[in-house]
Image (cartoon, rainbow, N blue to C red; front, top):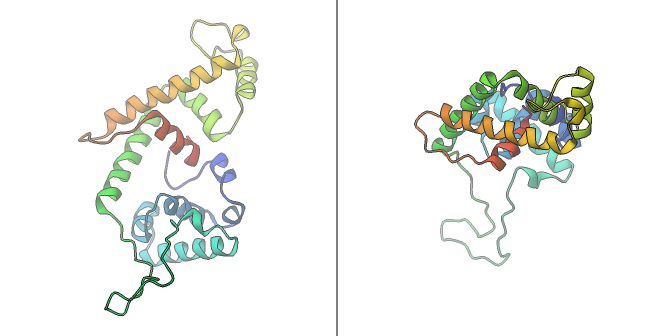
Length: 207
């Protein structure tokens, strides 16, 4: 899963205001949702820091106009009568947020591990994950797809006897297998990735 491209289903799930933006700005929105800054976005998209800052500003302005700025910013509440701190700053000042280098390294490790896991996954599992997370098909549609192909979804079970529940079972099994591969690909360990976390990431960016 290259991080320079969003899947069609991932684009479909973006806010309507963001869908109208260029692809790089859409990607910037995804990283901003992960609470990453312009420095990280520049490295991830292989662009200059100035261009990354411009994308961040474009996304921020777009979300402000659409009333959705909270999608990339945590609301901060201050009492309106908060006194000054003695350095010319009142309680209404919103503190700046700096990028945690450790978080940046961890995310890169995870994305590299996920890419390798997807590339090495069996063809059947890649196809199923793509249909579910990338093509955004329902279980019924996936079942019909396999029936039209005439190939089994689950080994040892004829496709004619396969149910929608079997589709959900196969997806869950594929995600768990992918998670095992991701964990084995993460060098140095120390990263706790759960099935639900992996599913959320695949939902966000596509498989």
